[in-house]
Length: 191
Image (cartoon, rainbow, N blue to C red; front, side, top):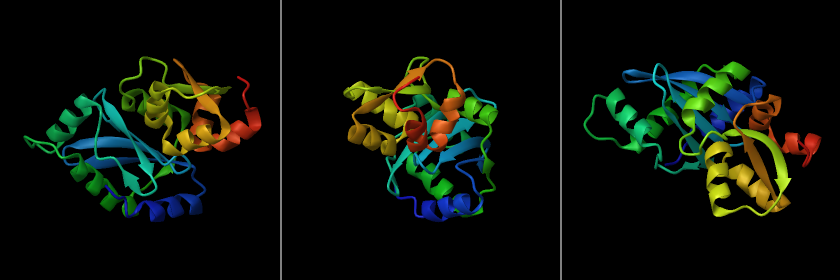
């Protein structure tokens, strides 16, 4: 799926001095809270009044149409009162709404609430804590893509580092979502 409106959305974010946009999207019968990091090219989605969500990483303008969180797939289908689900429909709907989305800079509370619901299969260690000098295993690569996006994986490969995740958020968790390279420049490999 190609997000044709993402560049214009990121330009609006830049003009508003917003690093991580937060907005609510009405998708048929469901409200979905969305956090988007233009630096990580990463969406976090959380269904309002449901304890479920999912993530989406962009690679350039492209997103994989596959959603690996089965409960989220079922919830999207239920939102449409439809007996089948096509993830491309949701992504096309989102792409069409980006030019009109009213967003704000995400707060720590909004980020924490959204990420808790959006992340699917990675035990309870979902919050970035620090960087470590190490090779990235295939499992770590998949986890980093889901939690932080393709841009972070590329950055890690270039710098021979991996992100380390903890079961609780810290001040660095959100600031890294805003700008992971700045966090690395300020803190390096230390905790």
